[in-house]
Image 1 (tube, rainbow, N blue to C red):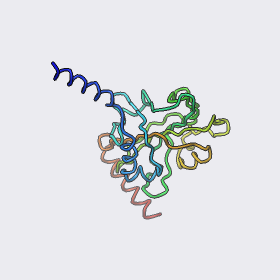
Image 2: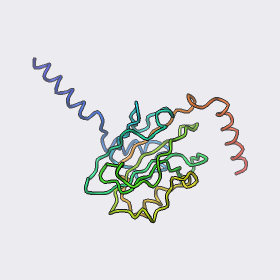
Image 3: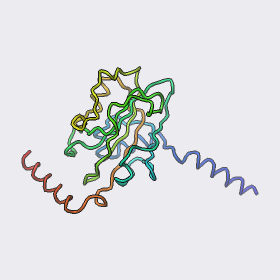
Image 4: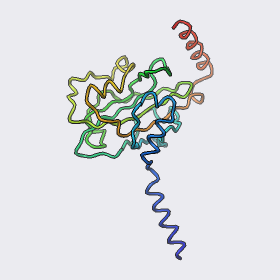
Length: 214
């Protein structure tokens, strides 16, 4: 009987922490990834819980493109509901590059989110699904704490496709006096399962040509 009670308590404790990650684990995961650490030089300590249909994002997990075609069904993070936050989702720039500084393609940007309710924030760039690339480029979710409301009328709408490349999260954070990032997460997208081999060959051929020209 005592053994059964002990087992039940362990199960309850384990399940209560199943969807959390320690601050040290989140920051260390950002530091350990060779590309993520170049994009986010000040790693967050808390986790953004991001759930797509059928799959949770978990610090480098690999998702299928079909799963990320639409926005996540839920996004949450530890927040003070009296404060406002900026949420962003970034991916590799066009064309992808591993050189520093790493400018990013902006996939999603929401400002003035009350607490962790990103749905009630102001959308500056609507959700644009990530595109799978060879070499496993990361897609990064970040949250910054705001000092007050951002005047979004003075921020250009970035939903237009040509406004999304060459995004600098450090420049944006500095211009709008954002604190953080305070929370984050990242993932990769499966490539070979999605892109035909001929496209893979064409990609590497184009990459070689651009490298020769550049």
